[in-house]
Length: 473
Image (cartoon, rainbow, N blue to C red):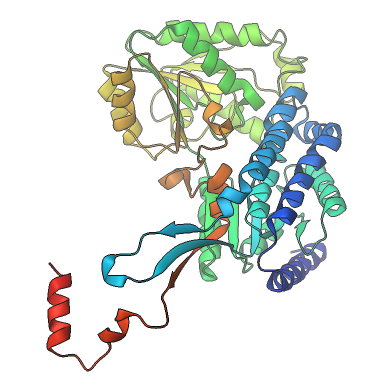
């Protein structure tokens, strides 16, 4: 560990102590102040959108500005507006009924802020996945320290500066640094840790948090399948799948990771998707609408996955492109792997790039068996117009979320909880679920001065035996 990293870790500890003290002095931030806090996040995105887009593009080598505007800035702005509009309803105490044997009495649930949250953001959506959890934390009345990814240093540095302009560091602040700083961050005694990243790192975060019994939300990933059911139009499916796979060059945790198609239709489906790739991007290397890969290491990994599938017998399809210019731009052309073997890297690893295996199944039950035989995916995409078939797929699988006849779009419905199940994540957020993630649901039961429960005290006798017998009926 370098001297700079050691100093940064000590600073993190100091910042946590400062925020804990500030929270102790104001445990219940007024809703009016919370709305102002949330609006600051939206204002940051509006006023500094161009600078944030430039920083993200710098980190990616090239990032399509439209993708940064829509998936990062607009998402956070809309999320903040939704939170401000619904905050009073979310924060209101909830009355619950009291059983007859506990009458007279009143019971309700308070939603209290947990305290200081640690938010660990990934590199693939470095603004949205830092600020959307922050909106949820602020709506709940929490304070927060954000740790951005070291793979997006320009964005991290800009976020650090902008957050400091909008918030005092005893409420919200950003810390930067590499793996050593990130590891130390997970070991701090936050009141909640919110992590977005890979399942492998998620396990380490959970283990570190467990030492302090810190609750965690883990937004992870996995191999999200797209299932085209018999009779569904190839062109319609191809448009949705091609867009979902090439948005942010496939560097999306809910991007379709592989496509399951009826027996004998793999090449027809692949050709339809390939045509969509060609229609979307005239020239892969120079097209401003096609994003680059985050780093040389990630680029080389994706190329290795393609070559591994090719060597093991998969048919590799790509739109016409200048290979040398594309590589120089650190872009991977949209790639289809037709019927790769199950033991190739494309079918055993989460791809996280614009590479899509297309696999045939004999019967729909076989497709569902394949899905359930592996870890639960973060997203599931079903293409069917038959309600019974859709229900068959939903009943026969588990996944974090589902889109029917589209891809990615469920993520943008603010009142839908977003999160994984099992390997793909723990907990959920967005909308009210985000507010609840950073809140403690505190149970309260109130009685008048005298209550029949006083009769339950010992010494126990015939009256107690009779009461117990009645309550066990």
